[in-house]
Amino acid sequence: MSSSINRLTAPVSRSILAIILGIILVIWPGLALSYVVIVIGVLLLLMGVISVISFYRAKSAGYVMNGSFPLDGFLMAALGIAMIAIPPFFVSILMYIIAFLLILGGVSQLSVLASARKAGPVSGLYYIFPILILLAGILIIMNPFGTAANLFMFCGITAIIYGVIDLINHIRFSRALRK
Image 1 (tube, helix red, strand yellow):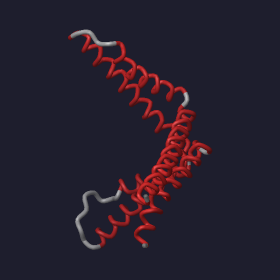
Image 2: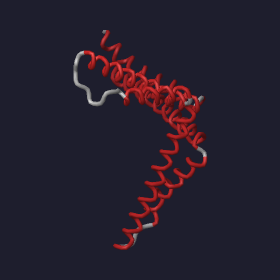
Image 3: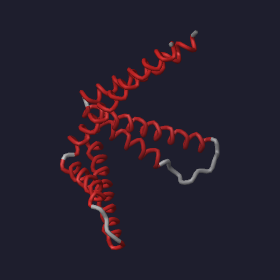
């Protein structure tokens, strides 16, 4: 009996959590993005501290170390502290990196299409996605924080839709199994 309850509650729990996450992302997209940066900062801080501790433990145990100072651990921890202290700065950097990659990808795809035209005709439809990718990169550069918030809102809406559809499918599947 308990295994059938677990089979029923896992999909329902997953659906409800997806809906809750989606609602949070739709209501507070900017805050969610800052929290993602903070969580990454906490992870970097922990990895840096663990690296430094491991270095000194190995050194005290007499192991030969590459380098005489755990610089990477300290730098990782410092970056983590900075990300925790000033997440908006790192959000903007992240968005600029994404924008650069999108622009680079769009230009690259357009140049491939231009080269392909030398070999034969290329439909104008093939240019739509590279142009959209290029425009997305430019829009992110123009408004990195707004774009990030919109991206999280889109993810939130998608999570809500996923959760609702998953819940409906689970209910339908459960009813079909009972019949």
